[in-house]
Length: 525
Image 1 (cartoon, rainbow, N blue to C red):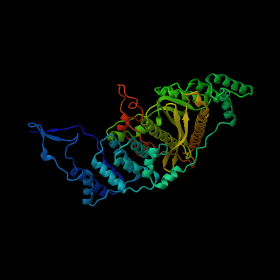
Image 2 (spheres, helix red, strand yellow):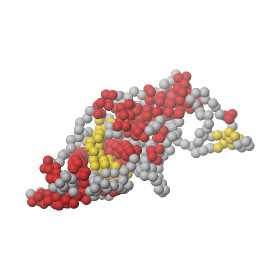
Image 3 (cartoon, rainbow, N blue to C red):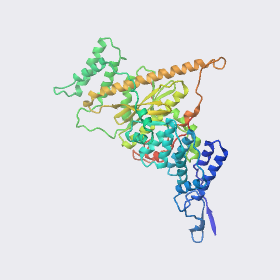
Image 4 (cartoon, rainbow, N blue to C red):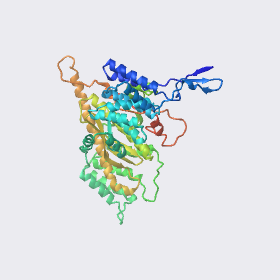
């Protein structure tokens, strides 16, 4: 007596639907679908995978092998053979279709659920694809990385970035993957870039900082922590006597020095607390920013606030997640969002002292967060020269990176290294970090001015848009929602986990469940 065991049906990687959507020729689409379905049937695996019907003999508790087929060649080769026998080549896909196809395949590849048949079909489609724009090259790169298997963390990061139309030139290992897949002339165009113009500290401010440290040195030239307080007071008094106000740059630098040196150790033999929490490291940087942002219109929102742009992206792409077995409608939490009048300007991330693997995952996440923010700005105001400046931190070390659009892709570039001193002996070089952070503040103030001015002019000109002739153009295309890729996260476990597994952004657990979002479209002052 035979019985049929049925498992819950799993969502499939629907290449047939994508083929139908990619060509306007009905006959060609039908023929392609027939070939794919025949390839699936002829390439059935020798053992029934989970989620399929399997007949079992109840008396002997053995599977009925009469229904099993033994393929003579590997499944991907059988797909190609079927296509050749039917003398049919899969039609070239439009950019958006390959983007969607690579997304679905990437989701399943990372979840270890991409079948050999669908891998072969994706390879067949990619082999016929002829990119003509930088973004199309990145779509093809993402597809090829999925086909090759995503064997390393760097390849997973490169796939997510490429599918988001981002080129990362910051991480050397990830950028080497881009250089391997992209044309040489495109890589040269990306690396030949201008330096971001940044506001520098006044020479007088640097001179005051140097005098403050020099007055606190001993006979051997070493900075004595106990002398720093009186030296700072001396310099501030001199500024007051000159009529310099508290909001002046020199006063702010001295206030920052006074705050930071108190948390520094005087003896190099003292041990740094490498187990200090992420919040501890964040507070030190945030306190420095407080001095710089006094009476400034920028608003800092911290405490893992959800970035509203990523929430919109997640909701817009909920259908693709559902089709591929996951559900996500929430956005990404950010350690520090810089906003003004409800407009998100930049995302900044912190980690405590963790492994380079976790830092690289944060790096990949933050690049995609800021790309989503930048593209949302560009979609709403008629601007093309906006550049985002953001920070990544791990422990007391960090760096600034810039992100701007280049043709139809986005390029991430390293700008400057940052460091908060742990020892008094590091204060000599701390002035460079202060200057870079002042530059970060001033850059975001300029972006704020540009965005708010463009938004106001757009609204003002739009008042008469419907009743008089107008040259005003507004971007109503919602496709910007769909070409930034984020990973759906598993629910946090109530059990205590190792720090490297408990990463809230792109941890090991998250990377295993990672996906891509597809289609082309607190603290306050």
